[in-house]
Amino acid sequence: MIVKPNRDRRAERHEAIRREILDAAWDAAHETSIAGLTLRDIATRVGMQQPSLYSHFTSKQAIYDAMFKQAWQIYLDDARSAADALPAEPRPRLIAMAEHYFDFAVADLPRHQLMDVNVVPNFQPSAEAYAPAMQVYDLMLEQLRGIGITRDEDADIYTALLGGLVNQQLANDPGGQRWRRLIPRVIAMFADDLGLP
Amino acid sequence: MIVKPNRDRRAERHEAIRREILDAAWDAAHETSIAGLTLRDIATRVGMQQPSLYSHFTSKQAIYDAMFKQAWQIYLDDARSAADALPAEPRPRLIAMAEHYFDFAVADLPRHQLMDVNVVPNFQPSAEAYAPAMQVYDLMLEQLRGIGITRDEDADIYTALLGGLVNQQLANDPGGQRWRRLIPRVIAMFADDLGLP
DNA sequence: GTCTATACACCGATAGAC
DNA sequence: GTCTATCGGTGTATAGAC
Image (cartoon, rainbow over all chains, first blue to last red; front, side):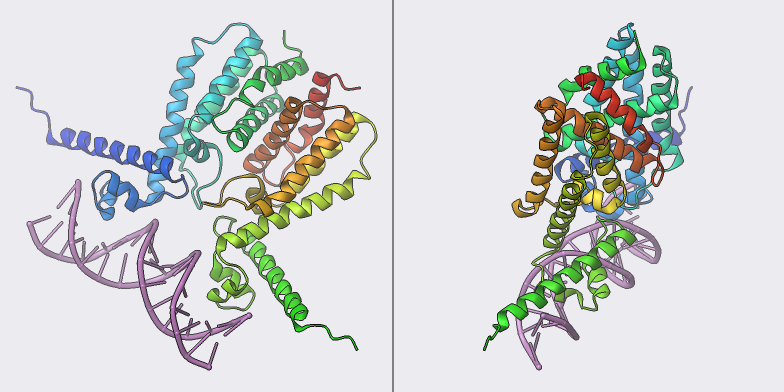
C-alpha cells in the first residue's frame, strides 16, 4: 500500500497558494502599476490579511523576485517553442524573432517594466531569478549565430533596435501598430548592413 | 520718483525660492532616485520644514511637473544652440544630432527617467510642462526635413534607434561607451536605407 | 497557516497658530 | 510664509491566539 507523505501534499498546497498570490500580484499590477504594488492589495485579492503573505514570501522584494523569474521563464519557454516554427531563411527568420519578442513585450506593460525597465525602486533580481533572463539572452545569441551574426557589436545593435521599437510603441502608441509595422524595414536595414543574404 | 510695487519684489523672491527648491529636488534625485524623491529630503536641503514647500508648490506632482518642464526647456535651449555648429553634410549632421541627444540623455539618469521613461508613479506632465517637449520634437522634425527626411515613418525609426541606444547604454553599461560608439554605424545604416548622400 | 494586534519608520497632505 | 501638530496611508516585522 502506497502512502504519500503529508509533506508532499503540504508542499503542493503551499506551491499552489504561492501561484495564487503571484496571480493576484499581476492582477494588482495591471490595475495600478508594477511600482505601485501594495501587499494589502495583493492580500485582499487572495482573501488574506496582509501579514499572512509572510507565510509564503519572506518580503515584498521576494514577491517581485518571483514575478521577475516567472515572467522571464514564460518568455524562455515561449521563445523555445516558437523556435521550431521560425522560417529558415535568414531575413524572414530575423523578422519573426523580432516580432515574437516585440509582441510579448508589448502585450503586458507592467510585465515589460518589471522585466526590462528599472521602474521598481530598490529592486534587484536575485541570481536565481535572473537565471532565465540570462538563458533568454543566450538563446538569442545562439539564434543570431545560426543566422551568421556572431559579433558582440552586432548583437548589441539588434537589442538596441528591438528595445527602441518596443519602448516607442509602449510610450507613444500603446495598443497600436505604429512601431510594430516598422519591424520588417528596420530588420531589413540591419540585414543590409550585415550583408545578410 | 519710480516706486516699484512690492508685488514685483515678492514675485521675484518667490520665483527664486522655487528655483532653490527645484535645485534641491534634483540634488535629492541624484542621491536617491527620481521615483524615490521625498518632500522631507527636499525641504531639509533648502532649510525648510516639509509642509512649507506647499507655499511654493501645490503638491509633489507639481514639483515633478516643474522639473519635467525645466529639463525639456534646458534640452530645447541646448539643441537650438548646438544647431549652429552642426556639420552641413547630411550624414555627419545626422550623427552629430544623434550624439548630441544621446550625450544629454545619458549624462543624467534621473533626468532621463523623468523626461523619457515613465518611472514616477501617477505622474503625468501638464500641458504647460509638456510644451517644451513638443517644441523639441518639432525642432527635431525640422532638422530632419532639412536633411531630406520628411516621412513620419522615417522620423519614427530615428526616434526608435536613438531611444534604443540610450536605454541599452544606461541599462547595461552605465558610464561606458558600448552603445555610444555604435551611433555612427547605426546612423550610417539608417542613411543607407534612406538613400541619403 | 492564518488570524488579530501591535510596533516602528516612513510618506504626502492638511489645519491652524504665529 | 513658515512653523508645529497631526492625519491616514504605506511597508516591514513580530508576538501570540487558534
